[in-house]
Length: 405
Image 1 (tube, one colour):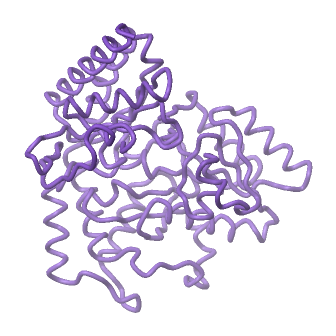
Image 2: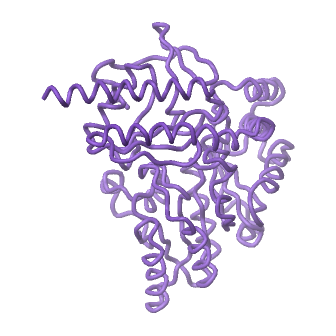
Image 3: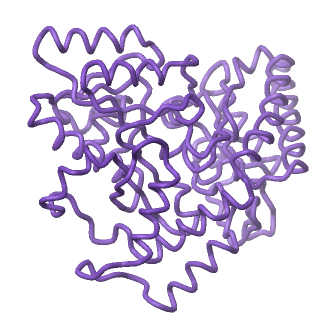
């Protein structure tokens, strides 16, 4: 975003906003189609979430690790009921990266006694930048300065079930058996890449066949973003470990969660101190998460994400047909969408033009020519129409520049 808009506008300071917009210090209002990289699913400063945090702040902001915390217990119980399949126990932390780190350690602790040590991740994947999570992340720019990373990670093409199957088979033949597969149901930072229909189902079958764990990173796709509460529900796939963060805190508090089946989580039963974090699951964060879940369910925001996402995506695809020399493709699911341009510079220019139109967008971390559209799920139909109008204006301005060259 800084590269796209910063050259023209410098640093922009925000001072206020409504549920779906931000206002800068000059009083200019921007429609938020960036969504804080996926944290504002229930909008900015959602009053239900803010109120829950304020009420808890007046009681007890942080916890004592030696005493039982009712909010943490309530959130764990709520997630056990909300998440698919046999997911039951939660480890709470402060970010998506920490959630992934905990998932990797859980999988290691579970599989090491079984003689399985290798993880499969995918090309284009983004799972965070701590050392373990970075070992699963695929972008060389992020990885190279910290080489060597953790051993035991291999990457296969995302969406290619044959490549995944071959990795399992080769591991079996060589004695380097697979401990776990870690995947995003839809790659966010890779450019909002959707796998072929049935891909997650086939990966689940491979994991079952070879005795590997399935870790789904739903840090960005979870909490209603794709039209279901969790993206894996589009295929009714049940992971062994699920990673959540970003929107779990309602855009008010940072919180992450690693949810696992009882069988997997049991590796921590004898010694829970094998993996801990001081601030994970603190009362303020848990209050925010519980309020966020209530808002998502009571307002049926996942269904709204599907409906409004269809409206936006239809409009973006129409624009792609009208400007084929600029736009390669528009794609997405629910309110997680992207417009892929013909090259990086065209993507940068689009983000900058949208900024001029008072709409915030930005590129994806692993795919600079792809601009994400990731607004709050609360975005109104009227604002959806304004976003499409702004996109049309931006592309028209870009087309004029191309023709003048």
